[in-house]
Image (tube, rainbow, N blue to C red; front, side, top):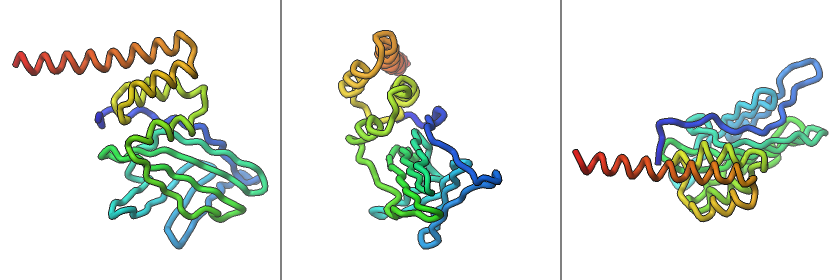
Length: 182
């Protein structure tokens, strides 16, 4: 998978602050977790299956967060590690503490696109597919992506995604033929 040109994350998170303009920071001293509801900075790490999953050392792919009032906030984020593993950060706050302490859930490669589909708003699908999927940063499942694009996007947008997919493969073919000629 491509790791050189990581696109900007797609973020659809409500930011909140105190009435006086101060930042709202939630922390879990037991696990060392912190989340700033005002800036969106998250520092969460877990050891799962002997592997460290850490928001500070992974690329944020997509973030969704919503404030429900009464101190309740839900954030769900999809991250990609430098070695191509994926995990979801999900935190629920109540007042000034975390309610859900699982925080990180590892996503198997064959579930990454389905997970992304469940998190993404329809208005962000085109950008996600073109920048993250078509660039080779996500596990490949062209049939799933084609069906997702056709059911979600306009004909013009869907055609743009399919063209980007075609360009990805034609670039790969060009590289292979160049390598063969050398």
